[in-house]
Image 1 (cartoon, rainbow, N blue to C red):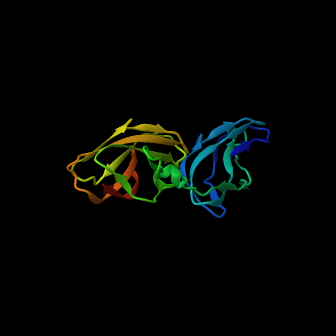
Image 2: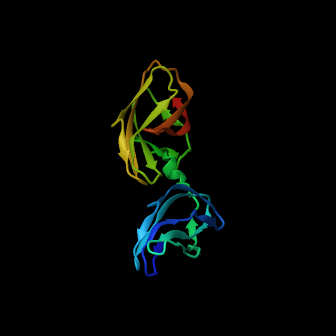
Image 3: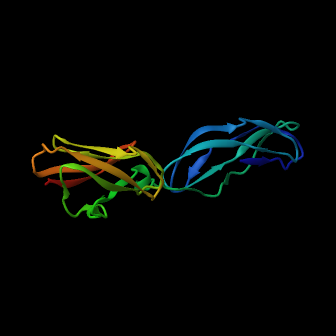
Length: 220
């Protein structure tokens, strides 16, 4: 609120009134007015300020006046009440889900030896068939979020006894909307019985597991 002294004498102890709120929303007083009062010379002005905490979405306006005492006349002097323009309070828009919940997901799993796809576009389309010995597979992971993800990795869960794996490198950084590929080397002991096993392929980041795909592992 800016108070102008349009008279011919100084007005002392000018203080703003309590403000009346209008509009479709509300606001809660935090601090103010500042200053609490002031002496305003003839032809001078003084600005008083408040801090409010906005309420729900909508509009709010403030109405009030100022009062003081003439330095020469010693008479009370008051201004007319005026109302501010409407202040628009915007709704809180939640952050997009890809920001709140970083989305690293498995896109592809490919057999290096044959080039066959086991996972394609995030879906298992066939079994992972391996024989005793070593077998390299490639797992492609995509960062679907708007943020760079660090410490992204992959793992195989539920492997039968005698089947192990290594990942190189174990962890990677993935920029927003980019993909990275992990090389996974499976080692299958000759003592592992032939058969079908249910396993999971998982990708994770520092935030924890983010995507799991069920796979059928076939030992031939």
